[in-house]
Image 1 (cartoon, rainbow, N blue to C red):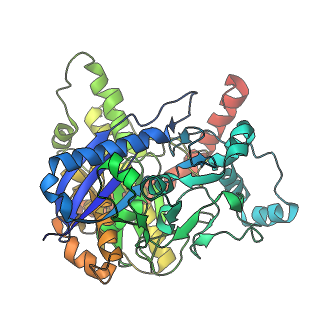
Image 2 (image 1 turned 180 degrees about the vertical axis):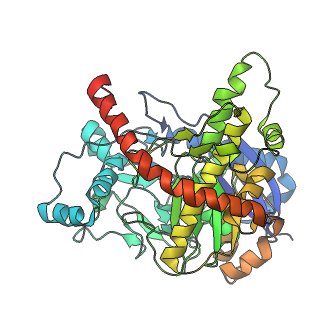
Length: 516
């Protein structure tokens, strides 16, 4: 009998239910789409946790209906979800309000002053602003300040994955590798922060509101009869603790050695490595616990990564065809830009359409226009700009780890594009490899599940058996040298020179336009 792992990848815009066998083949898949969020005020992004559960149930039932003959072959379940989505639960484990998802731009005020000694040390290290921005990014701090009645009723503050685990098993338990967000986690020690040792920890949350943590690969519990009736998942199956979507992606592309990087070309573009050492890419930017229990995942993130490319296509290509189908698809654009030379005839994109903790004043910029430039030049320049930023991240991770990266594995929507993959190879000067499935988060969850039930003795063995390179892109040495010149002489110089201008833009907006 072929053993199958049932995995769920619960993302921003859809829930995907999948069946994988122990060879890494995607046997079956169902996608249940939904609106990413609703917004009660400008900049807000919220979603109803009940909707997430409803879509989970419907995706599972549809997968079962289409694969009745395979359903008895399922040996376990493993779930992966998007990161940094907190849910307030009352004593009956019911959601008290919509969850604030990672796209939300609101910030807490945090009027309580940082202790004098802590403030002085942070200022000396040049990290005071980063520390304060982290505090303001914590969603529960905003809820405390603006909805105290909700916070008073909050018995537990949990992740999206924790909520699903509870609905499936009745156990309010989650994986250490899934607890990724603005919460008081000691990622180095893989446990909640000691409340008596929080001088330099920006996230402070009542211990009574936290949940139990277990390593990825542990059994969280078994599927209850109630959840079986709602989902169609066989009662009694073990639910294996998984990891976050990015962590499962890194595992799913087989990037478990320290000289292999994982790039996710998603809404948020990221580059991660799997390190045996705990490495912070920057102070207060932790290395997250990997799904592989002996690894950490240091990460560099471009917040509006390939979202920027989709934004450009929607705003400057498709919007001119409101009543009919646009004749130019992303695939067609990839074909059209092939003949545009590297560097786009001097056009360059600074791809920070959204700020970050390290660059709170950042804005996007398109620099170097002249009369020769077209829509196609801008399209390719955005791809190049994102990759320059990821290359800078790769260089930083190498410096921190002391281990050169020899190859790069890619996943996410952008990885389906041959143009994107070849441009990445040419910019990085390294082989770029794509694996057998686009659904790498689901594959990573399946690997975790098969290791968790003991089907494979280790993650190394499971990766060898289940991850297969389907295509490799090799760099063109001549083109790489051109990109290296652009990276060294344009990219590395642009942000420091633009930073004062970005700060002045915000100053003028606040003073003269009453902008937040």
